[in-house]
Length: 296
Image (cartoon, rainbow, N blue to C red; front, top):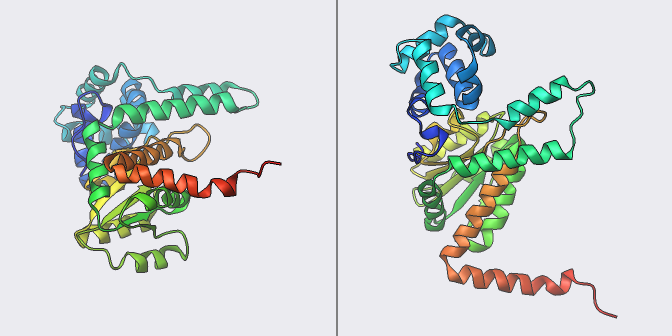
C-alpha cells in the first residue's frame, strides 16, 4: 500500500485516507460511491444525497451505508467532513467541462489543453509527498532488474520509462511493448525478490496489468505503481504509489502528469549517482556528430 502522505495532500485528509483503505473491501454499490468521491472530492462535497446517488448510478441508501462504513453516522456527517477538509480545493477540469458543455460548438483548443495540463501537474505536485517519491527512487536504484509494465494507453509510457531509465540502472526493460499480454507474462516469469516491477495504469485500467502486478507481488518483487488516484485498483497491490492525475474533459485520460513523474524519477536516479551524470554527458557527446549537420 502507498506510504502515508503529508497532511498537505488531499489524499491525506482523514475521510480520503479511510476511503482509500476500505474501497477494495466494499460491496459493489458502495464501491461506486467511494470511487466517485476519490476521483471528484470537490464535486462530491457539493452534491445532495440524491444527486450523488444519481452520479454514481446507485441509491441514497447506498450513499448512507458508505457514510456509516466511514463511521460518519450518515450522509450529513460525510458531507460535512468533505466540506471541512476539501472546501479550499478547486477543480479546473470540472470547470472547463462545464464551460465546454455550454459552448454551441463544444470547441476545444490549445489554451484549454494547457489549462488542463497545468492543473494535473499542480495536483501531482501536491498529492505526492517527498518521502513517497524518495522511496520510489530508492526502489529503482536498489533493484537488480526493473521490469516496466503498461497496457492500453499506458504501453508507450512504459516504453518511455524503460528507455530513459535503461542507461542509469542496473537493468531496465519494458515487458509489454511487443507480443501482447502473453509475451509480457513470459518476460516477467523470472522476476524475483531482488527485482522491481514498475507498473503504469491509467483509466481505463487494464486487467492484464493488475494480474501481472499480482504475480510479481506474489513472487516477492517490489511493486511500484504510477496511477491516477487511490481509487485505482493498482494501489492495493503496490508497495509504493505515485499519483498522476489523469483528468481530461475530452480524452479518456491525460498522460501529462505521468510523463512529468517519469522524468522526475529518471533525474532523481541520475542525481543519486554522480557516475550517471558523467555517463549522461558521455552519451550526449557520443551522438553529437550524428545530430548536427556538418559545417560547410
